[in-house]
Amino acid sequence: MSPFDSPPRPAAAGAGVPPQTGRPAPVPRVASPALADVLADPSRAHRDALMRRVAQEGTPLVDAADDPDHRVYTFVHAGAPGSRAALLDVNKLVDAGTYREALMEQVPGTTLWALALRMPAGWRATYGLAVDDGTVPLALEQDADAAARLADLERRRTRARAVSDPALHADLDAWYDLLRRSGPDPLARDEALLAAGTSVVVGPHAPRLPGPLADEDPDAALAAHGTPLGAAGRGRMVPVPGLPPDGGVQAWWHVPPVPPGPGGYDVLVLLDGGPWRTRGARVLDRLSATGLLRPTVTLLVQHADAAVRSRDLTCSPGFVRTLVGLVDAAADVVGAPVAHDPRRTTVAGQSLGGLTALYAQCVAPGWFGASVCQSGSWWWPSGDDAGWLPRAVAEVAADPAWRLGRVHLEVGTQERVLLEPTRWLRDLLAERCERLGYREVAGGHDAAWWAVTLPEALASVTARR
Image 1: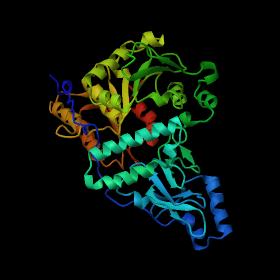
Image 2: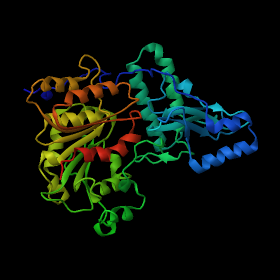
Image 3: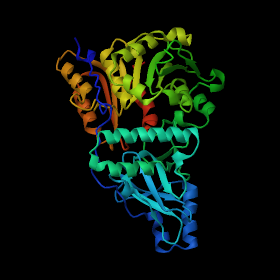
Image 4: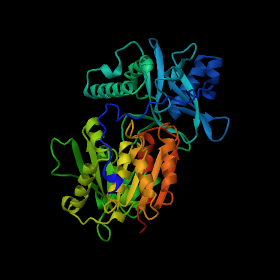
């Protein structure tokens, strides 16, 4: 019997919560070259010059640092006479222990608030501004989006308190109270690929979508690769029938605007794939139409809430069987031939989805010949069985004959809980995979980089033509 067949099913309340570790170093605040003139003389001319640069470039302003591998990023908030405080909320950089170090400072003689950070030139991260201007916190406004955001924040607060030292609860509560005011930066230059209105900082060397996928003119982008989109049509989304209505899972097949290749379409299973139905659909179209991937149908799987997601994306043999069943029935659902070949079937995910992607490949290698695991939650579960999947892999890898297919691992350099375990897993798999890819990104546990590095990761594990 394989160790993959009997994963732990922990019942403890904190078993699905990652370890809570504080940031090991202060927030890297520095003096801002962009603010030098206005700090020396907050005259109208200097204030206007600063805001002209902000209007032209968007925020954060990016300047040279003390070495070529870093930059100084200056975040600016216009403020108002009633503003009392402004916090820069950056994924995996600011937390309950460091948020005071991320409070922006008011520029003397102005309503401007600013903060400069020295960060890698390849930095890519989601961020927001939490502004105390005396009004009702953003997440308490009476609309559905705000209510959902508040519910998510309170769920995260409860989870964090459950696994943290009671002595830290006051700081946790103060931090989460500030997050209720966090929202997008109205001056931001960039926004997230899959989440409209979510601010993203993108350094000059940060990962970006490959050019053909990022082009704002889709017809021109595809025509340049011999596939005029106007002729091929747009890709289509096909809802997956037959899923239990009370199971908390929805799924769709994306069919690209190109015909299948020899032997049918390749298959990609994308966990937490709901956002790709809308803003990400054009990228899925182009993956096949530009030739970055062979013609590929994509199964987008989305869970209704965090509890159902935790049930299914924690090394669940039953959920893997569900995925196998959906892939097996793909041709009937999409109305086109689909390859039944593990070498042409990839499963990909992030966080718990990354954990599940590797688990699915391990437990069902006859179906999934490749996996892409971005920021895989290798810590799961908390408690006595912590790190179960990497330990199970180590157990089977002790057999010199054991082999896995193609695997690609990615992790953010600011992911304190995941960075070293991902490196350890990379080293463990180095001699056990048909092909192993690995990438570290200057960022946190963050869809800001997951979405843009995913296409090249997928191409790296695709079976050669």
